[in-house]
Length: 352
Image (tube, rainbow, N blue to C red; front, side, top):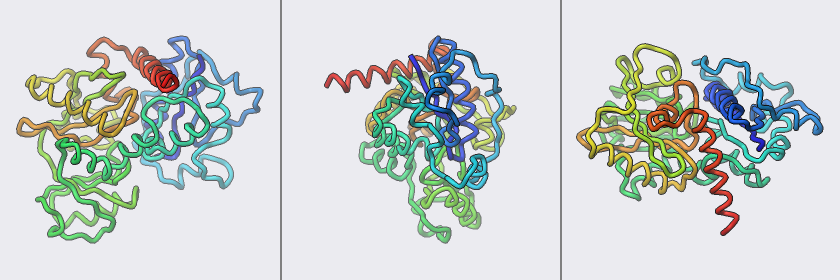
């Protein structure tokens, strides 16, 4: 079986994706799959007759454990590719994907998770891991996913949507502190916890650099958890404990002494069951499939859904491999399980 692992791309989370891509590639190659690792944006400068040579079982030599904490701008990403083209798909990407039995999407961030890539692959009848076009877009757009949470009685933080920097506290129907974040995005890029009105404009200005809309959310003071679901199996929650600051981009991906991951955490059984139930309900409400991750804050014995992740990170510090390990699923088995689960979904669709 031949698999393309698509990583990189044009997202602010490009470096995170490249780390996931190398680790996923090595995991699948260790299982005997012939895998080609392809950067979505850079592509491969190869002739048609050379494409088959990209698929190999030899491990990548790059070190996937080191992730730059630089948030890449469009200018810096564009400079990586010769010529003036800014197209999301690099040279020969589609041809290489068409030569595979499955594409493993190791992409993170807006252009990888918002449904654009999924829509193109659908048009070319190329099979891929993760959720489909619509569900990916809904999960990535926090405004739309919040509306769906509310329609389905899924507890979530209060919020308003802002499209400009100038906004007064009187327009926010809840008290400070608040959370400001881009409507589309991930890995806490452009996200700020704002304690006073004086700092609101600066936070909105930064969030709106990454999208044309921002969410202002009620700040929930509570314990932070994440719960993954793979092939219908809800995995044990992981608790994220940050002893200094909060769980921002740097705390997510850099080795440090202040971020701790506890799996399984000490947790009342009723709260754990509540999060497991809400994970399934959120997954279903958004139309997600194959696998994903739901993030929670727990306060006063209530679990609040913060957001859904349709392509969770698979880096050395990511959460879903930690949860899988608790129930005896290795990283390599997890990657294979994701591939085989999506293959069954395609087979079921073909039989209907």
